Image 1 (cartoon, rainbow, N blue to C red):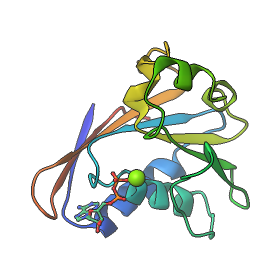
Image 2: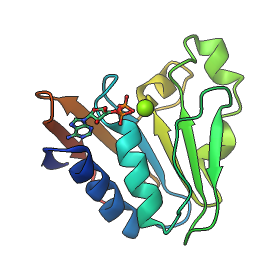
Image 3: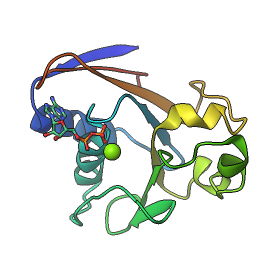
Amino acid sequence: MATFTSHSPQETEALGEQLARAATAGLVFGLSGDLGAGKTSLVRGLARGLGITTRVHSPTFTLVNEYPGGRLKLFHLDLYRLETPDQLRSAGIEEFLSPDGVTVIEWAERLELGGWKFTPGRNFVRVNLALVSETERLITYDGL
Ligand SMILES: Nc1ncnc2c1ncn2[C@@H]1O[C@H](COP(=O)(O)OP(=O)(O)O)[C@@H](O)[C@H]1O
Ligand SMILES: [Mg+2]
């Protein structure tokens, strides 16, 4: 696990950008951490690092936002509203776990509820963001 202390949304985005540059096709980033921890900020950086210029917003009424136009296509999922094992299993998450591009999942700890193992592997990179203070975030992540 690597550790990074971020002092601003910009620094969190910059870490995302750095991770995206090392990303290869089929990679899944699983983000965990409380509301306001900076998950969506990190996704903005990932998108930028892949060369995507579209504005990034969390998918709210759909499972996934797709961002083409970069070095690899980015799929952005947010599992916040999927609360039961049934909801998780029937949401259609599966195809994005071995993506034709790169997937990033907010609230990835919910995958376990749906029966998926939240473990590091060939194609799964865990990123945890923890609130330290108003502007400080402790970010731990699997090396790429
Ligand atoms: N170091 C930091 N990294 C990321 N966001 C930060 C940081 N410091 C303050 N913030 C603020 O925290 C909020 C993070 O929001 P967001 O990225 O949407 O988090 P999440 O998706 O985890 O709910 C934003 O309002 C942002 O301005
Ligand atoms: Mg978010």
